[in-house]
Every structure is written in structure tokens, then in C-alpha cells.
Image (tube, rainbow, N blue to C red; front, side, top):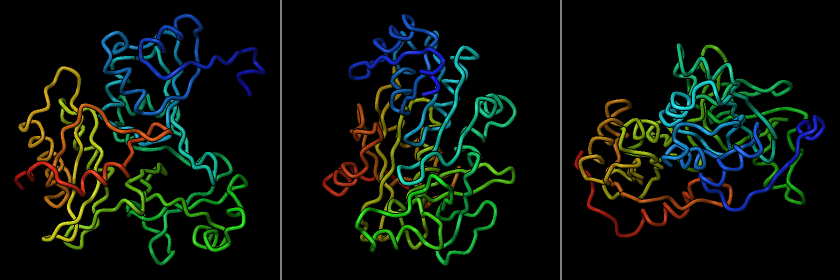
Length: 304
């Protein structure tokens, strides 16, 4: 609405394509838009847009973005694009924001900020709580809960579901995260997506971030699947970066990065090499479909 009040206009494009989007930005710029991470990756991987999109003021969200790929965009596109991130849910509206200044700091002296979703938005109270409902210590992972004027009172005609989500005036987001010393929130996983390996909670977010640090890996969603040995095991789906063939050596090296950055339990035991990922209507990797595929016949396990 603010955009329209200031005399701007809205143009709706067809299915997203990097070149078509860039052409629209050149024609209409400056352009303010909101892209999903998968769209950012498409722009980075297309040689015609890898160096940036003229006239673009970039906001992104709707799914976690891999810090290594965000750093690529910040480095390649430079000051021509101002980056902003918004984290929120349908039930709570906007929860946190990572500002343009935060992105500048992340590209320079505080690179860890690129893994954050920012600080709580004005008027939003955010807490991280453990399974007993107690507030988690700084740096400890727990469920992200929210209280604000924008948060829903409950689900329509579903009191049972409402009681599970809204407790003591706080809305449970279903996301697991932690705060750092400066009040920035980092999302580690979804409650329902935690992989339990030999009794150890493995959060998918940090594993995915470690895998994508390999220069030959563009995307790397992680899911769990049943294991007769450890209860569950970590399964990764690797999409190669442009110009890099999907090799077994790349998969092994990426998995080693995860083990070294986190722990041996975080190392994927099975890797699927994919040309592209199935996406939900919202542009997120469709982990429901990935879990179904992981549960079926797959490639031979990687070597621990």
C-alpha cells in the first residue's frame, strides 16, 4: 500500500524466469519486490543475471536462505541492490526483520548475521522456550513463540488445535531457533522436521548451511528417514551449482564439511543428487515429497 500511495504501480508477471524478471526490472526500475530464496538462486545461477539485476530493491523470505548463497548475491550484486529479509507466519504476521544495514554488516565484519532472520519487529515480543515452557538460555535451541497485536486469537472452530498452539497468550510457531547475544534470532529447524540419530536431535538448518558451503553445491535440503541402526538417519538432496557436474566426490566432500562443522552425527548417510528440487506453491523445497522419496529405494549410503 505504501508503494501505491507514493505513486508506484504493480505489475504481475507470469511464471518466474530469471531473464524475464530481469527484463521487467530494466523496463520498470527501480523495482521493489519480494522473492523466495529459490528465485534468488535462479537469478544467481543464470549467467545473464548472475552479476545483478539493474533497478532492483530486494526483499526476500518465505523460506530459509542459505548463508553461503546469500553471501554470493551480496558480493556479486554489490550496492546496486538493497537487501531486506522478513520472517513471519500466517498466524502471527511479521515476526523479525533483517535490515539492509544488517546485510551490509553481514557482507563485511559480521558474516554470521547472514544466517539470522533478524531482530523482532516493533511491537512483537519473541521468546525461545524449551519443552517445559521455560525460557531457553541464550544460544540454546527451543521453540519460537510470539506475542503481538497481529498474532491470531485461534483457529476458526478448532479449539483443540488452538489449545495446542496458543498457550498462556503466546503463539507457538512450530519453528526451533535460538537468540545470540545481540538479540538476533536464528532458525534451526521445524519441530516436526528434527531428525533423531542415536538419541541426538539433529536440526536440519545447520546441516543444510554446512553442505551449501561447498562451492559445487547450490541447494541441499535435508530430511530424516528410518534407520535400523540409529533410529533415524540424515538424508540430503544435493543440487549442483551451475557448471559443476553432480559427482560422488562432491557429495562426499560436502558431507565431510557438515561433519567437521557440526559433528559426525550430522553427516548425511545417504545423498540424492538432483538436477532441481520439487517446490511447494509457496516456493519452498517440498520436504513432504522429499521424505517420501527418502523412505523408498535410494542410492547407496555414503561412507561415514
